[in-house]
Length: 163
Image (tube, rainbow, N blue to C red; front, side):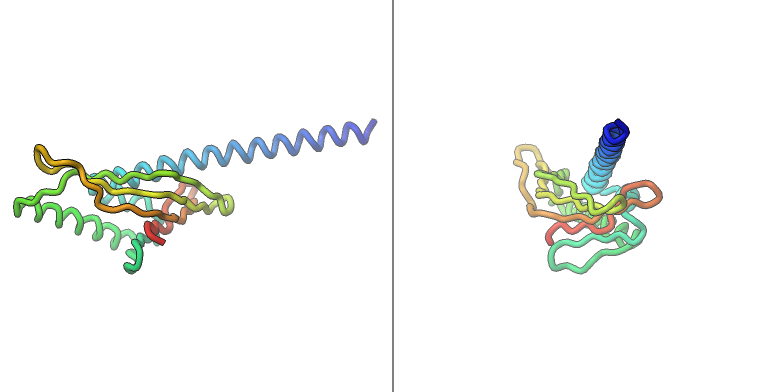
């Protein structure tokens, strides 16, 4: 009888632990999805402060063969540079439509409790800049992002949009 009771208690403990781990991971997935939404909106609106806020202090952005843009100051400069370029094009009579970065077929892989990878396909579309124009696909690719939990919050360690 004691062996049966012990087996039941062990099984219940394992089930409870598994359910707790699944609930924690589900919560982490939601936090990561919210982080990536915040990233996308910051990028699409060229809000440098919001963009920087989704990265770890030593976080980095990489696109293909380009060098890494690392750290909050460099990331802020990158977004400010894109914004300045768009403003100059608009002044020259060549405005760029609103940016829309889209993530598709997204998958989150947990490496351990504080590290994850976000795998996805992505696409950048520019909306019409002038009446009668059509949206245009500017770029498409796939990415593998390194995510890290810092002080209880998920942040981007490396955004690699063309590994």
